[in-house]
Image (cartoon, rainbow over the protein chains, first blue to last red):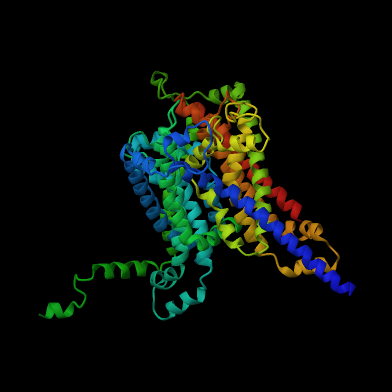
Length: 286
Length: 315
C-alpha cells in the first residue's frame, strides 16, 4: 500500500514536472517568436495604426499597402536581386571549393591534416573588421570594390571554413568500404568520389549549402563597407539606409523585413533536420 | 576509312576524355593536395594576404580624406595614440561587459532550453525548431524589430510593462546611458541563445542513460546528477560553444551598430565598433587597423587560455 502510494506520488510529481516544463518551454518559444510575429502584425497594419497613441495589438484593418510601397516605391527589388546574385556566387564558390577540400581532409591521411583543420578553424576567428579594412584597400586596387563578385569573395572568408567543417561530418558518415569496392571494380579515385561518395552526401551538401546561403543572404558589415552604389548594394544595407534620422517608415521596414526573411524561413524549414545535424557535428567536433 | 576505324574515340566526347584525364591525375600521390589547393588559394587571397596587409597598415598612415598625409611608415604611432585615448579604454570595458553579459545570458538560457526540451514531451520537437529561428534572422531585421518593440512612443514592450504595472510610463531604453547596453544585451541574448540550445541539446542526447541510472543507484538526486553527470559530459561542448560565441561577439559590431550606433554618448561603444567607426566615419584606416590587430591578439590569447584551462579542469 505504502509502496503503491509512493509510486503514484512519483508519477504525480513527474506529471507536475512535465506541466511545468511545458509552461517553461512555451515561454521560451514565445520569447523566440514574439518579435517575428510582432513584425508580421506591424507589416499588415496601416500607418495610422502603427503610429498611434493607444497601442493596437491586432490590426483593425489588414492591409498590404506596406508591401506594395516597399516593392514599388523603393529600389528594394534591385537590392533583393543583388543579394540573390551575391548569394548564388558565394554558394557556388563554397560548394565547389569546400566540397573538394572537405572530402580531402576526411578521406586522406596526410601529414599536417589535423593542423590544416585547425587552420581552417582559426581563419574563421579572424575579426571581421580586421579583414574588412585591408580588403577595402585591396579590392579598390583590383577594381572589385562595389562589385557583387568582390562581395562574394569576401563572404568566402568566413563561410568557406564553416562549409568545410560542416561537410566533414557528412563525409565521415560514409563508410570507406564503399569507395574501396568501387576502386576494386576499376573506378578511379575521382570516379569513386563522384559516383559513390557524392550521391551519399547529397542531403548534407544541400543542408550545408543552405546554411551558407543564409549566411550570405543575411550578411551586413562586409556589404556596408564594400558596396557604395545600388549596383551591388545588398538588401540588409539598403534596409538600414532606409532608416531616416527622424521619420521612421516602420510599416515599410517591417514589410521589407518579412519579405527578406521569408526565403530564409522556407529554406530552413526544408533542410532543418540535416542542417542541425551538420552544425552540431561541425561545431562540437572542433 | 582506315583512319576513322583506327580512331574509336572521336571528338564527340571531349568531356569524357577530360574526366578520364582528371581520373588519371586522381591516382597520383598528390591528389589530396590538388583537392585542397583551391580552398588554400582562396583563403590565402581573401584572408591571409589582407590580414598581413592590415597588420602592415596599422604601422602606416592612411586616411582616405587626408591623402596629403601620404602612406608613410609611422611606427607605433597608432598604437600609442590608441592606448592614450580614453575612448579606447571605455570601449574595451564595454566590450568586456557586453561579451560576458551576452555569453552568460545565452549559455544560461540555452542550457535551460536544452534541459527542458530534452524531456521529449508532445510538441517539444516543434518547439526545438521554433526556438532556433532567431539565430537565422539577419541582424538588420532583428535590430529593427527590437528597436520598434522598445520604441519610447510606439513600443509594445513599454505598453506591456505599463499594463503589468512594472513601469509607470513609457521609457526610451536606448536613449538612456544606464539602460542602453542592457537593452542591447536583451536583443543579443534573444539572437544568440538558440546557438547554445542547439549544441547543448545535441550534447544532452549523446549522454548514455546508464550514467544516470548508476548515479541514481548511488543515491544522487536530480541536482547532484546534474552536477556530477550532466555538466561534466557537456564540458567539451560548453567550451567549444563559449569560445566560438565569444569570438563572434567580440568581432561583430552589427547589432550594436544598428541599435545604438555606440551611443548615447559612448555608453555602448565596443572595440569592434570603435575600429569600424574609425574607418567608416573618420576614414582613418591606420588607426582602425591598429584597434583591429589588438582585437585579434586579445581573441587569440583568450581562445588559447580558455581551451587550456578547460583541459586542465577536465584532467
